[in-house]
Image (cartoon, rainbow, N blue to C red; front, top):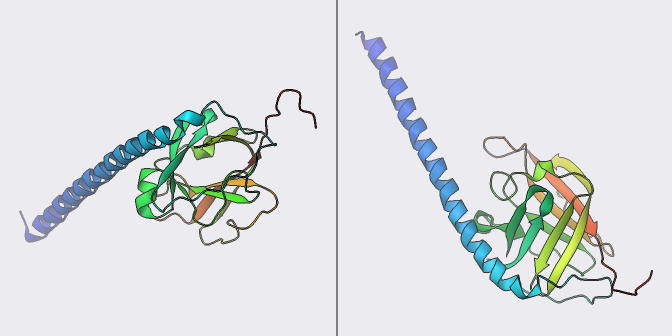
Amino acid sequence: MSVKKKKVSMIVSILFTLGGIFLLYGSWLMVDSKLSQDKAHEIAKSKVVSSSAQVITKKSTSQSYHFEKGEIFGVLHIPSIKAELPIIEGTGEQELKQAVGHFIGSSFPMQNNQIVLSGHRNTVFQNLGELVIGDNIVVEMPDGEYKYEIKNTEIVDADDRTVIRSTAPNEILTLTTCYPFSYIGSAPKRYIVYAEPVFVEQSGERG
C-alpha cells in the first residue's frame, strides 16, 4: 500500500473513531438529561399534588411567588402533544437540562404581565412545533391550575430582544425554544408561542 493510501486510510479511521465518540457522547447527554427530567418531574408533582383539583377563576386574587434559582415549583401540561413537564426557576444550562425554565424576572400566573418559559428543542420542547392556534396549555402551581389558550406563534432571530417584554396589564404566557427544530449546533432562530388566560366561571357567576 502506498504512503498516500495509508494516510487516507488513517484519516478515514480517525474520522470514524471521532464520529463514534461524538455519537456516544450525544447519547450519554440525552440519557443524562432524561434522568434529570424524570427526577425533576417527581419533585414537581410532589409540589402541586394538592392543587390538581383547584381551577383558578377570574375572581381569584394574584399570588405572590418567590422561588430560588434552580428550584422546581410547578408542572406545564400541553394536552395536544401529551406533554407533562416540570418547571424550574432559571433558564441557565443546568436548569434547562432538568426542566422547562422560568425566565427570572418575568411574571407568574395572575400577575397581569408576561410569563416566559423556555426549553430545549431536542428535549422538553421537541414537539412544540406541532401546536396550533386554539390549543390549551395548563400551568400547575402549588396553589392551583392556570389555563391558557394559544393565540399566536412566530419565528424570530436568536438575538431578538423584543420577545421578552412587559405586556401589562395583559397576561401573556410565552413559550420559547430554538429553531429550526432539526438544526445541529447553535440555532439561528427562536420559535415563540403566545397564549392568553382562559378563566373558568364559578357556578352562578355571570359576566
